View: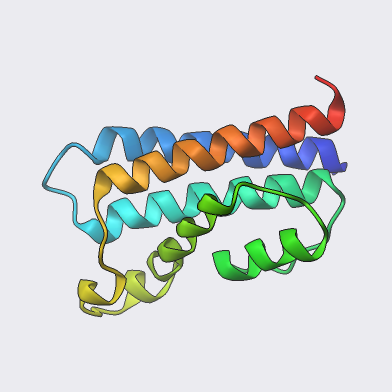
Length: 134
């Protein structure tokens, strides 16, 4: 799959995660771990979309810290405040399979997670468009 096609596919998948997050976040019934998982997955795919579009190879990982580090290493700029999204990393694996106390990932709230996903999406879509001239 070509870089642009992969980037577009990852952005589509990220938007699906964002859609799920928008539907679930207002409902108090789903556990925070479920909300955090969808937020983490969306951000992960968005970061990978930018990397893929720039033809940067990345390993299979759910670690947002690693992906942000790779963006920086490859001189792919992003707004510094997006690094807050790194707080979502534990939701990808640790909190999916272990009952760690949520205090380890606090402060966490659903509106923050949804806002973070929206901000990362706006940047990622802009970065991909700017690189292609769309």
